Image (cartoon, rainbow, N blue to C red; front, side):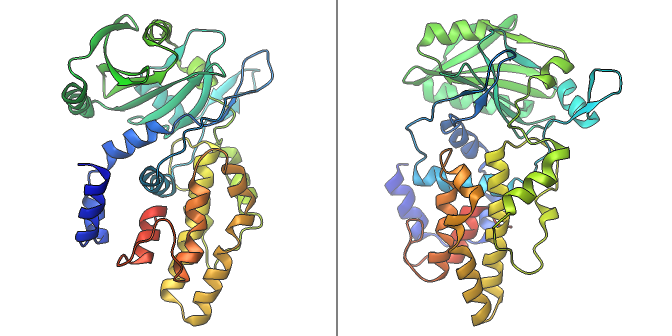
Length: 354
């Protein structure tokens, strides 16, 4: 089904919240997320100043933007790597993070120039991390073992049998995505399996990089997490800083943003924060009288001035999604609202409102 056919079917189909909740979106959001993983992030080495990963010129398509914006706002699992001095001159990590590390293969790139530049959704069963040398990047995901066979079957249907490639002392199944981009699936190890995807120049360079992957101990792996991850002890302060200058509706509960466990980088945290605020103003517009509706529109018209969104703008399109809230509520046409589609439903879907 192409984009035009999908748009036609969406226009002809009545979709409510319950229908959306039943949609099998996880594989879709996985694939879309991988397409725009190449975002600028600080890359640190042990003896150098932070480097900057170049911003890709490839911006998400509108459909990617909608799905990923919703995923970012809806996933409020924001606990990052926590480093706790143990009083003996070394470092101890929070028990839940050690449990995550112990439940998975702890993989790093064994090259001096390569470091972890990004982490996301850091849980025992799901996780994402990006390695970079400041020019190229390699994305690693772990997911429940039960998802391995369906993804392998999907790849074989789309790309053929692929090819065997040595990885971590075993073999993986490598598939071409086109344009010198490849993904390698590693068979499940315990409760999860790993997939590695990237475009690092050509097939030979990709295979060589796979050969340089290594597994490490818990402390080494957790210590490799980047500074861009939000640490639990910093989470409240970071959220408070992001909310500075952002108008909040009466009764807004920021504690909802901080619920859950996992890792989010600053962009994802910013999406969760601004998404929660936007959804609260949408709720007020829906439930309020004329004065409350005007207040909600006026508040959301200031989104272009929110520093948190300005900071996010170079990394992705979520600020553009938030910018559409006020005009949509005011009855103005936007890029993501269509005739005959309830603008509130469209906004809530776009932002991941509950």
